[in-house]
Image (cartoon, rainbow, N blue to C red; front, side, top):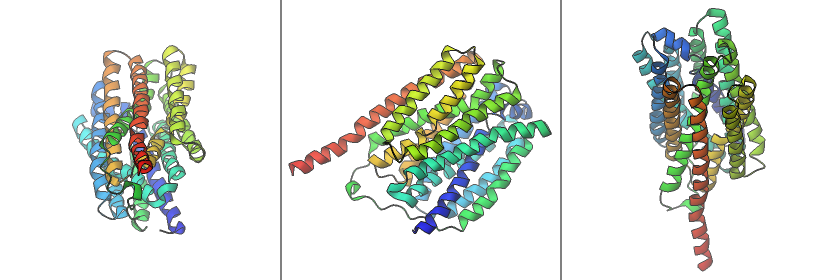
Length: 394
């Protein structure tokens, strides 16, 4: 694939990820309105996150296998059209169970789109993928930053959320058409050092757990910070949406900064700094939980610190393993599990224990995530060390 072909394809994936960010980030700030539409209590409507992430998990798993077998852009275009139709139906659901069925199927499309953009970008840029991968996830942040602003504006003008989802639905179709007309990248050849190597079960399993915990903390915070701030009377409906937007806005800035950092620092160094920032920010919010100012500061710092973790996990894995669509799909299955379990768990704790339970659960997830990362760094080095020792012995 020529350089001239690579950049339009990369730009198309970036647009698709803006759309993905819009649809994912809309769930939290529209939660209360969707509860009104379906006459649901807060703990009931929190099932939306569970069903959405269950679909995301299944879409990631099966989507990864499909991208390994058929031209990626044909499949991705179909996924985008399907996604657009389902997004338009979300605000029209008259009952909770119809809404949950829609978001379950919508999650399938989101998962397939996510694994497709990540896998195909790896195939387009190969070893030079680092800054492009950070750029891809920065554009997810762009969508996630814009979504709460669009929601706040639409609610202030119309009093409801119908046109939020309908705007997102309309935007899918030109992106699908563009991707359909671009050549699909070919799967990567297996590098020499990975030929005839067994499937790296343990490193893949540990990295899957890293994605479970990371996306759990990111999705849990992004989905519930609006309700957390509103419930504790820190913010109004509109300013709580601005707080959510601040989280995703600085998340986006962090990912844009991560594009530059990824060309100058090793993935493991970046990740350790990111986790240090996460621990400091969540710790501040927990220690000074009566302060709206600290909530804003902690939210901004948490968004910055979380920003580059996901793409850097992928870069670290690419550095140590041969990544196929199937392996990427497994990583995103982990991401789907995290996004399924943590927001639902926070919703239950919110009702049973109180708002502070959200911050405690996020802190636990961050600590466990750091421990899993250190374990991955240890076990993924072993095969390389063994092979080098064997080479010296020979």
